[in-house]
Length: 344
Ligand code: DOR
Ligand code: ZN
View (tube, helix red, strand yellow):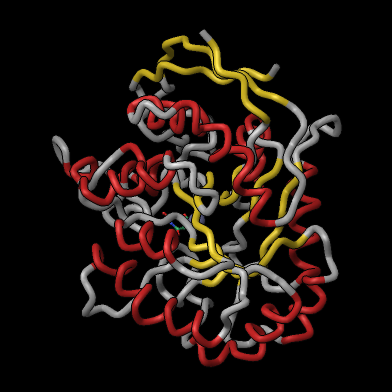
């Protein structure tokens, strides 16, 4: 048995830089035609010039025959100027700005300390139709880590949308019932990406049989009721929800560490993981629209023309892939998947 799909895109990817980038980019480029590249490098990608140079390095890590298209993002800061926004709007290789609340996640220290400082940039983005991609978590230390997304919607997102109702927003890697509900019901233009780990696992996965750092990402996995709400959103056919893996490689030594880095590596087997989740929900017929149609439609880009095939064939996720000095552990390493990706 096989599933034939229009070639999908990944609307949220971390490729890193240098040797790490060389190791992971081919995985994403094998499954996806396009991918939205996150800008949280060290230093962050804050200008169009930096993004275009980064894009060249990404393309340089692939064979010249590869048709992969990186869609670049810029890292929003307190100091992002309207001029930079207007440059981004005129540069087709740039797809939008990424908002990291300062301190919310990996390499976010130079992110936004107070959205009030970004009004000029946000106003320009709204006016020029440049999307804002949001890491939606408050960083208030008094807010429980499991509540940070739901509180972000109330405290930051709703006021932001009141001030900038025409700003195009993607709420990235949503993890809660509240986010799924907000995105379903809010006025246009808003959408959300959903990762495979948040469709497949609840927070028990982080603690089952011991502390399991390879299941630790941000926003952190939530309760089962939230997983079920996300699964319903992803498989419900609503065009506002689409595929974004948030594949985020960290070397094994930094994951299996006293303060483990946040991030799940799913670049190797992204589509198979989604197929697994959709099959569990008896919604394989909804996978193609989620993976290949809703994203480009929201961003106003053409749908891909090529096709990919998923074969019903059991295979075991490898325990480790080559990556820097200590290797890279894919999400669910050693477990069996029932679908296997192949290019047609
Ligand atoms: O788990 C995560 N890892 N969440 C993020 O927001 C960032 C990412 C990373 O860059 O490692
Ligand atoms: Zn991310």
